[in-house]
Length: 446
Image (tube, rainbow, N blue to C red):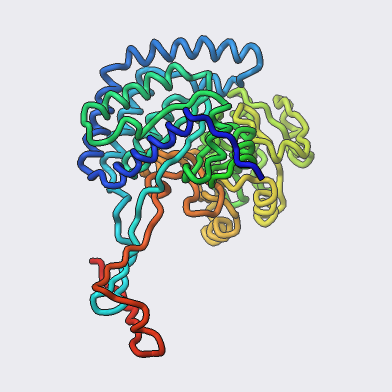
């Protein structure tokens, strides 16, 4: 099989990123934190410039929306304002306040006198992050990458390229001020052709993190020759058990869907026990409908609501149970039991985040053990599935796979580990033929 042709430009960019990653791997925590705090201040001081560039992007995004190239939810994600810029600055400061995840001793073993083995966390290396629409991702990713000691190559969508450029420029100015971390710690690519080359560079890149639509993530997963961390869908469920509290049912159901419908941790399907109060069920759905939500319901649900003529219901079809709307659309299904709810979630869900509302603690624990998702909640909105809310500072993405990181991926997901062995002229030969036994004694790390 022929090796893919890689342009000299991309080779040089990745080479510089690799060189930067070697510097970052040895950068002390104090220097990282100074850079992040300085970047936060730079964002605040340059908000006008950022908003000017973002307005250019919004004009383009609205054209793309009208032509059908961009969804309404994606168009909204491009938008920045002073509050969002302040949130970016706070994200930098939040990440700076976290412990350095690299260089931590995870396990220590004395193999023999003078021969000690340590498992130590270390950066992954060079990471390609591909994302759509949200320019604030540039700052989130850089903050986490710098703190964990990784170099990052960013590919954003053309709908936000001016915002991405100005934000990357501010990062470069900050790095140039301190001189401790190379400017090539972060770089941008802007064309699909460049991405097509990068995803083939298995010897040069260490990890790819795609953030965006189902189509984007699946395309990267199918074509990459580099490990991929991410999720294709965010099909999240709320299950209202027969023993659910009224106030909690209202809060969790409405917040999960309405707080921010255009994101992957918003609920897409509401599952309701057949013995759940019809009056409360109708109240929840009416509030959804009044908020602009289109309700797509199963036959049993339609029958339960036939005495409530104010509803405008659409019959759900098979495709609705496996669709991520990221919009004001909700699939609603009546189930006979918690077991049926779990079966539905595990069959149609995307292993992202699912929640149960119930006062039955035993059932709640069973549900959280039985649902095979990265996040399983009890009496809490699916919207809590977020790196910042988890206390991770920010997140580079969400992983629904079962590799080294799962769920919202923060700093800990951007480090791996290596083994460091400290000896004193030891050779394996002295332990052969039972001449001498290895101790394998744990070394206390307190």
